Length: 286
Ligand SMILES: [Zn+2]
Ligand SMILES: [Zn+2]
Image 1: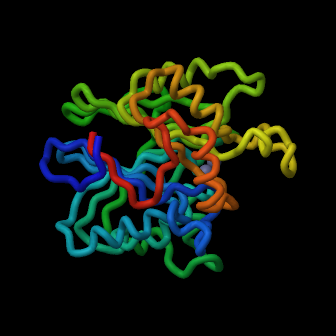
Image 2 (image 1 turned 90 degrees about the horizontal axis):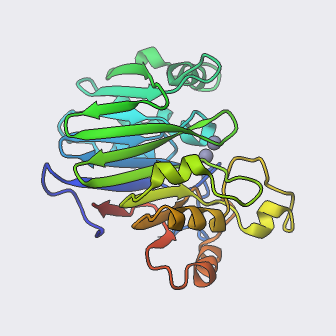
């Protein structure tokens, strides 16, 4: 697996446009790992996908400028603010000729269309959803089911997070990429059997790893138990138990500086070349 750009239609390629959790964190202390919130681009042959619309979706949209109008499928993990807040600034929504299919699971009867209608309304924002010139089709995701795109199969599962969250597993021929964020591990330190089964043997995994053990247990500030996110240690244990080939720790705490991420890596990731903190802008060819 190498960091590179897409070259041929058969490529299976993943790019991270936003890796930060909760709220954007720009500034000199986060410039290397990045400050944009969740957004991942996935290309499988001719098919193009985007996981979530955090603020990373704005530069992703700008990268499409001048490109041939395309059909792109958005797959939402859930509808928390850090996963939708970039949509109002996703420029291709204003361009006729683009087609977007947007899948989200319903939460208390509300899906992405309802959330965007609220975000894009006066007095919070001057543009409303019906002013977009692109073709947007909102679709309800059946969690636990699969989406088939020719040779590509995308499996879904429900994971542990306040209000629920969807994990996605892309299976393209013999290759697989799994995204599981936002997710919290079992409180008793045991393995989450749903997660271990879902990520089993993946070639590439991006997984929630937001807190240190001290933060999670309340030895550094208030306890983060029940907040819906995993510790670095829990993410590593689950990835290793499932035999994942390469693991990218994701959804970095907004207060975590580059130096702190490096320091954690220097202790917890020593001897683990297949596990690291993912950086904004990194791309992976499977
Ligand atoms: Zn989040
Ligand atoms: Zn969340």
